[in-house]
Amino acid sequence: MAMIKTTEEIQALREGGVLLSRALQAAVDAVKPGVTMRELDDIATHVIEEAGGTPSFKGYKGGSKIPFPSTVCISVNEEVVHGVGSRGVVLNEGDIVGLDIGCWYKKMCTDMAVTVPVGKISKECTDLLIATRASMMAGVEAALVGGDVRDISAAVEGAVNQKKYGIVKSLVGHGVGHAVHESPHVPNYTGGGFPKVPLKSGMCLAIEPMLTLGTDDVMTGKDGWTIVTTDGSLAAHFEVTIAVLPEGPEILTPLPNIGL
Ligand code: MG
Image (cartoon, rainbow, N blue to C red; front, side, top):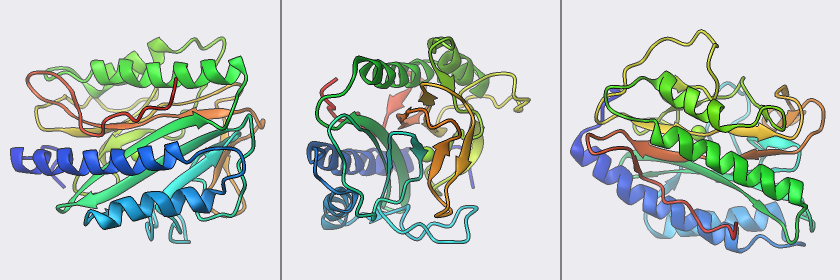
């Protein structure tokens, strides 16, 4: 898979990104106490399919034996990512819920996520969401032609107050476009021994920090998919798909309004 996308491919990603963002916004707008994960998943699925897109996570295997069952990865509280969105789990006032979504459109694949409040949340949770989004944006701004993927990692890490937050290290961002996950890895920290990968015009990357209120250590739940913090601490995840371009990084998946 080519790391560099053509102008036409980036245009398809741009259109797919707008559709994906619209689907995610519809799900975000439906988040409230009492809603089930399955209802949110159905809303997002409908938006994507009605516009001629295809959810990219549903049926995806990755490293798991079980194909992923839903359009949206829905992860609540101590669940970090990859929560199964077709569960009948009811969201409660004060929860934080991560919604991660991907779709195929014109043969190109985009990927994005937000974590949002369910009703009124604590100040600690609000700060966690804002800090996670800010670290993602710092990473986006560092995605400059002539730089290196490690610049993105350093920018994300540098934006995080590590006395307050854990940075999940065993899950990383990635190239995207021709497949759900492509090279290169885009870690949210430095010092992991990742290779130097020059940033070139036309590279499309998913930048996706995951922060926690405690440990940076995670494990896979019994369902074979849901990733949770090992200490039960709350976690947040934000993600955008970007194109690295001569005029600067372009966010291909516009950030939804989450009220924060
Ligand atoms: Mg991703």
